[in-house]
Length: 299
Image (cartoon, rainbow, N blue to C red; front, side):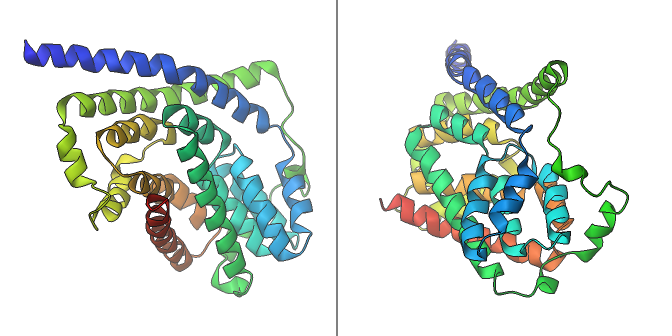
């Protein structure tokens, strides 16, 4: 009966979290799908026409606001690069958009709290701007995969500048597809997080992710590689670990490394960036996540 009672508690906790989080899933998806109809290439192009350092700051902000997936940003970045737009803000935009979007911010705010949502956004912004500043001084031949430009030869010259035409049926269909994808991983994450709350003693979590232990941050970063399947699905999991004693710095490191090490974004980045630079990029982000986690833990 003890195990049965624990299973009932798992589903009870999961049900409460579903009721709490899923309205924000819907809001985030609707906001994201609506923003997809914005003229991102035009906005980025105008921002990048400024001084490269100023443009990098704007590119980081626009990347975090972009609801497009990494594959959606790649054609924009390639087109603007071919037209002579400076490289550093474009890579900043590509990086920031792969690490943060409005949906993730909304879900993090509701699932964990506003402090973590802003800490996550601030860390992505600092990393994106720092990356752009470094790239400003590097030769393009070290960074860009030139063969990627050949993929665009068959496209109309100005096709990237037109926003998507808004059609209600297409909008709702796309929103439903996004909802099915996110909700699957969200429910999976909620069940896993609830099971951790019920079955895993808090002292085990505290011992594993004790903020005072040197290995807590690297361990969180390592665990994000296999566990980060979907941004929304990891939020209930990290929420449960935080309740069990996980340090907030470890949670931030998890949220930063996870998106960067997923296979899909890495393959998208590899269509724009040279293979060795992708390795350097991921290594730099992992190092930054550890430093950001340490700084956040100390606040």
